[in-house]
Image (cartoon, rainbow over all chains, first blue to last red):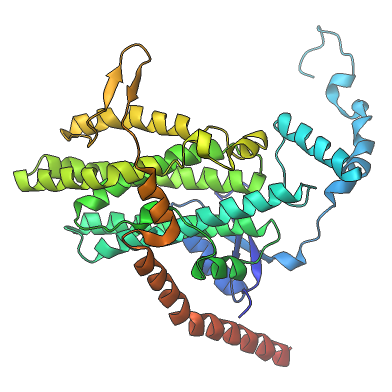
Length: 93
Length: 314
């Protein structure tokens, strides 16, 4: 038999923080993926909420096109606060 | 020509301490080395459950039983993290399992030794997990992102394994004469195989040099082994046990322990399948896999059925 589908697992470690990718596992369906993720990734109270996503549903950017994708942001230093001169005397800015 | 450029670029990324992620370009040999190493590592975690599983039902107290169950469960989880890391390199889990069960893939030889007494649970936690941690800590900085991340998780969980093992031996060593003898006997049997866990001497290690260049491996076998001996000998002394090595002595000048020659013939015999438990371990794995086949199929059939039911409702 072929492998069960692969699920990507995201865990929220505590309320107030976002879910974070922690790894992946195989499961027959999404419900089982949640149960298995509970056993594998939260045995030491690492989480309060679990998301599982079928790996095939993820569309990823291509690392070979990384430059083309992210270059446009590189030259736009005026998007950062340090680009602007404000005199020392001016406080709280 | 393009490949050569790519390889130079790849090596410069490694030299700059950049992490390599699954969909990045990588030389085939790098991918191949990682698949071999990570899958062997995963197989070791899975087979590593067997020697300890032997004692779960015979643990001397509920506390010890809970700890041992938790440890074995961790090892199953570690196997899973590692298989998942390996699968990011484009291999299928089922193929990796086949390679283990057909004997094509190796796992750590230490698990081909038998666990004869309860003291062996102590010695395994203290020495075998101790040596594994020593090996795994530098792997947290390995150049391949998913492997490094899996190792961080494993190392975090594993620190209790070693402490619970040492505590078992400490309890035995503070017990009766017979209990202390049992602890000494376990140390006698596990010491040398634990030193072998770091692999052949650097001069005889066929994969080491390239792995160091690729920063898959960060510290050489002999350096890790020396570090292990330096740390472990004083721990044995605290227990009041004797390390079974006549040549062991502390060198004031270097600040390191000198130790006797490792029996590499024994090591290679066990690697080649002639250790005390190689056959038994494989038979147990194959049986577990085959006995579980109907569960895997039934779970899939159930999920298909639920899916078609939900479609009808919709």
